Image (cartoon, rainbow, N blue to C red):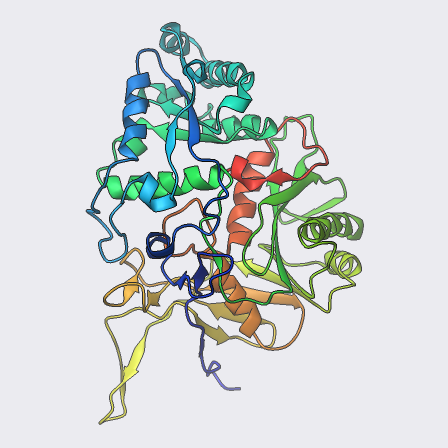
Length: 472
């Protein structure tokens, strides 16, 4: 038996599109593309984007000052090989952002800090006060597009619950406001206000504002026009909850261009727990795949995709495979792919000397897009690594450590790894809540994790699909 592994493959960096009609408006670099061509949905987002605010007593001016910063220009002091100067919100997105009308700005009263200090559950006090303010803004929903909430460090006791209390302020507020269809942006004093590289802060907040207002910064330029990508994730509720133990969350059904602004979520009842991992029955999997396919059809004039790829972090059991195949029987090709993030493999880049023919390690990491098959059903894919074409020299995001691959395990489907790997690499560039070149996971998985974490805190899921922009 040979100990050698298969020869590696390489897939180039995916291009991003910044105009629905002009095929020439493409770039590898998302921020550079925005500066060159403007956002993909230019002219389709309300101008200006109107911001309502919630702040502690007598600290509204700090929040207004932060909002004004978005109009200024900043040069980066970090990631200089990747991050372009922030040109101001108007130049970045071709529209303005301003405060909403006067009665859309709330300052909480002086008693809050004292009530939090005196309470054994300060997180409950803080969350209740913020949600009351949000409910009061809801009466003026037609007068604003996004709510900025200033979170000072003095409220730190209310960010999380006590030991054993599954509470997170960020996720709690997102769950409550998503149910009301109100997009919010938390502005942390210790992060957004204190972070020294203002260009980095402005890019991240600017992208979030544009996407939460309904904008599309970019899409994928080169992809199969009849393909769809689905991400599944599960959320576990606390044992003391009187609601179903598991909530099944289906992330956006992404189409070929990486667009997917809606998702479905519901409480799953037919669940088999093995080694602390939940697996769906055939009926449950058929249900979630059917609803996911309906989302795709609604966005594509009733047409079904020719090819569907489903991602999840655990293996696909036989009942889950059967449920998928039954729901997706009209599709020509169905790939069920397990995405394993925590693997023990590492890779070192070896260059061969032209004269001696001997190889030696180089000072550069493995190229992003490198794939090594481990057999017919498994492969290693380097989502993280060296990238050409986005900086003057090779660009290595983060600049430290040896990049680890993810492991892809195909439980259904056949053929080469080309389409599976290309789509995973491309979807890693579709997180509009991030200014990085790529994520470590395809957005099908990254968004599903976020959605599941927030959705389990919602009081009622309902049957209507949700837009992801309320959960960002």
